[in-house]
Amino acid sequence: MKAIILYDSRTSGGSTEAVVDSIGLGLAECGYYVEKAKCKANADFSFVKEFDLVVIGAPVYYFIVASQLLGALIHGNLKKCLKRKKIALFLTCGSRQSLAAVLYLPQIKIHLIRNKILVEKIFAPEALSDGTVDSFVEEMLLEYTRTPKSRVLSAKWTDEAKECFQSMPSFMQGTFKTMAEEFAEEMGYTEITLEVLEEARDRLGAT
Ligand SMILES: Cc1cc2nc3c(=O)[nH]c(=O)nc-3n(C[C@H](O)[C@H](O)[C@H](O)COP(=O)(O)O)c2cc1C
Image (cartoon, rainbow, N blue to C red; front, top):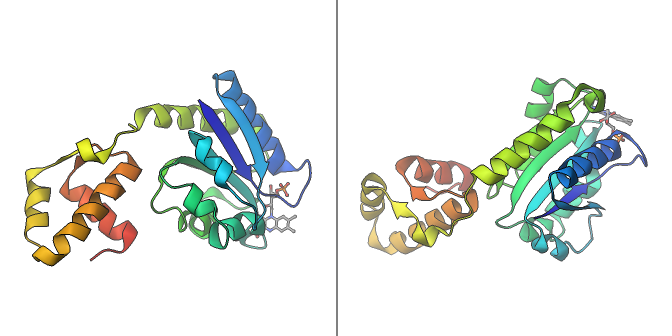
């Protein structure tokens, strides 16, 4: 299995790089082939396609997630190259978990609404010594193996979901079906239920 850790930081040898190295070590100890890459907004991220697991992390400076990572997601081809990838997210910052989860994580997650986020974590400066990085890696690997990598073409629609689909005007059914199946595939769902359709609507803005 191959994992890539994509990160950003202004600080060479700072806390984010220390967390990146610790995650890398944890994954390598579990048998993963691991690479890390520091994000540049205008870089070509095509290489990401060859990795099974993608870890994305960055610090927060002045209330904004580090700019090269955000730039790569907004202006570069990173988002496109992350299609169908299972992702683990982390931030390093000085704010409380609850605040960071509301203020900072959404700055990244808004660009990954079609991805399966295995686990997300806010690391405080003491993260390396208190074991939270180790538990992040454990959780990530557990979720990775738990999430099936199935093609939704083999996934089943429940009767309720099928009924909902069939109640739509016929000219909308094709688009709706494709969108729902693609969403389920990206999220690793093997069954399309009413809940899956609602989640797709909420996350993709479908009506
Ligand atoms: C200039 C500067 C601005 C920062 N602004 C914030 C902030 O707005 N919110 C926050 O929670 N942490 C903030 N921090 C704390 C950093 O996010 C935290 O120390 C992080 O671990 C730094 O990562 P690095 O060592 O890779 O640079 C700031 C740190 C610096 C140096």
